[in-house]
Image (cartoon, rainbow, N blue to C red):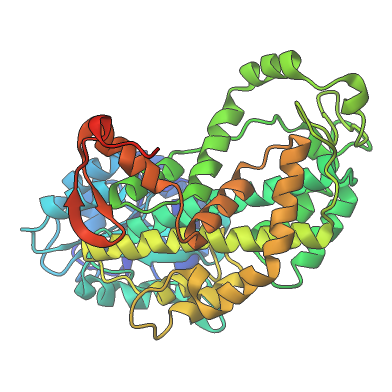
Length: 498
């Protein structure tokens, strides 16, 4: 092609699995894409593998920017951190007024803030955009969460809407607000995802090691739930996992061969750090991250199990399926997992999900307020209805709770969810109580219930904490009969009640 003839609609920098699949998605929708990667052979190889896609493989940033129609759009799908800064530095000398550079990687929103500040005096736009759905979503339709300026969004909109996932005929992409809103929303999405996965895993564990169900029966239950109010991507794949045979051991369940040690990439920790800074309690998400951290200490868990393991008689109470499976009794159990049934497990999962999403969306609301994003929470819920990992029927109710609300309500207090919690609270309590008696770990379910109990308790235990703070640190307190007026007491010398 002639170097002075622009003809590509956008450029994609970074051709790993996500980048390559997103490029193919754009090509499927009639867009001509210029390709660039630090490894030049990647661009030419992708173009050669898909000759009908119309890709233009570029060997330099100059060639890439020259190949684009103006104002240019360049999408970065490179690893978070220094590679994003390196790509921006390489591009900056070749960009003009109105051009848009999109960081579509998994960047921390604070890094996006820094990059926005560094490029504020440039004539082109920088946008941080979260993408969810993994490599499959990138190929067939992801959920996308762009931030940045409204002007940049208007330039991106006709390119992004056709390639996004669709829910009820609406593209699962929308402007999430100013500044680093896109990456903030994606961070909270990932935190909620941690919570969802932990709650589902705990319910599945209670089915197998509490109720003593075979995996196939557990899968049947998840399939049934997936046809009703709990319908979601994660529930669906859980049912499939519980039916998957081990290719190396005929007749065995593959899940039983998976090492009980969960990995993480740090986005859950980012969510917790942001919540602490903003003063939002997210105990379900925190419990989910803590559970992964504890799972990683496998050697220590094995040592502790040997030290505190239940007796052989107790360990067989639930019909052990694995050598290290304590069955229906954990360490120091006060009894078996008795009382809850399948309906209680379903209710506990749904109620805890309400708690988790209440926490996540409160964090979104507080972040939008403090950072002045201007995020539309109903729009975020609609974005997440398809294409992303937490896609679920549940999000219809979430969007409805926020739609038209003068201020962001706490989900648990919205009429529909409050009624759902009232109906499911007995089963939720039965599950948490039975698991605790049986010594079966349920950090997510228990943290969710504790959050709810704290929410609905008119007078809790903070009075004593504040009195202790005033005693040793003279921090002061407020009296019930004179709120807003600080008081200090010399507790050590104060008159004692007789």
